[in-house]
Amino acid sequence: MAARREAGITSIFGSGARARILGYLAQSSDPQTGYAIAKDLELSFSNVYPELKRLEAWRILASRPDLRGGKRYSLIDEDLRRFLLKRIRILSSSDWFSGARVAERRSFFEEARRIPLKASPSKRGGRKRPFSDELRRPPQKDRALKRVRPLAGGRR
Picture 1 (cartoon, rainbow, N blue to C red):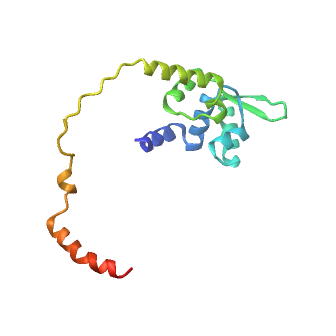
Picture 2 (picture 1 turned 120 degrees about the vertical axis):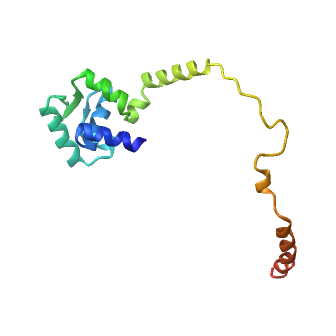
């Protein structure tokens, strides 16, 4: 199922790298540098920077100058962001461990903890183990093992 979904997303965006870059930027809370994108997605820089330039030329991404002279990229269209958030989940470790994300996960866990779950009673009711017939050794094998055991004991 995941491979089929990935192929669909790739065909929509034209390349797997482009889809991953867009998914990453959709999840990112701050504008990202090309270096950070390439590093977090484990893509080559020579693959990431041309895609970023194309996406910026197509006005899908906006860039702003960084303090170090580089560029930081972010998505422009909120509708595209919502689409990507539904279809692609790619988070950087800094976003995953950010205070807001940790608080969000904790609230989800608390909500899930309040959902009552009832375990159904066991159908076994103390009877024999399931598949016990398959685990039982036939008498022929027991006889064969008795014949082989003295031979194995003498070779030590």
